[in-house]
Amino acid sequence: MTASKHTAGPWVYNQWGRQILTRAKGSDQILIATVAINTRDDEGSYNAHLIAAAPQMYDALEQLADSLEESIKAEYPEPIHPAVQHKYDRDMSEVIEARNLLAKARGES
Image (cartoon, rainbow, N blue to C red; front, side, top):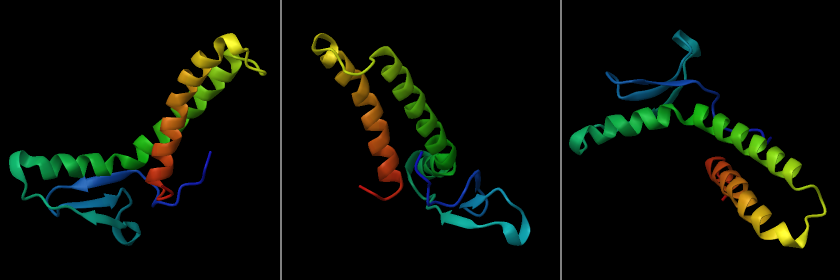
């Protein structure tokens, strides 16, 4: 598990101020972003909800990737037999994709 560098969640969307904020109250609250809402079909509001959910989605994806990798490695003990290498590679590609997305979220790609 790689330490994240973003402001810890949970974050909330304050639709009246068009802001993404940490859930803390008062002086402990941190402004994460101000969101443009003047988009078609209320798209800006949906974007804001997506952004507010980002820390929890990051944590969930990281946990899923860890669990999936553990399951795959338990199913294919090393050394990987050549007859199942293609299936192992296909299964691990999902883990690699998740790890790449997590790296992107950390600003590492």
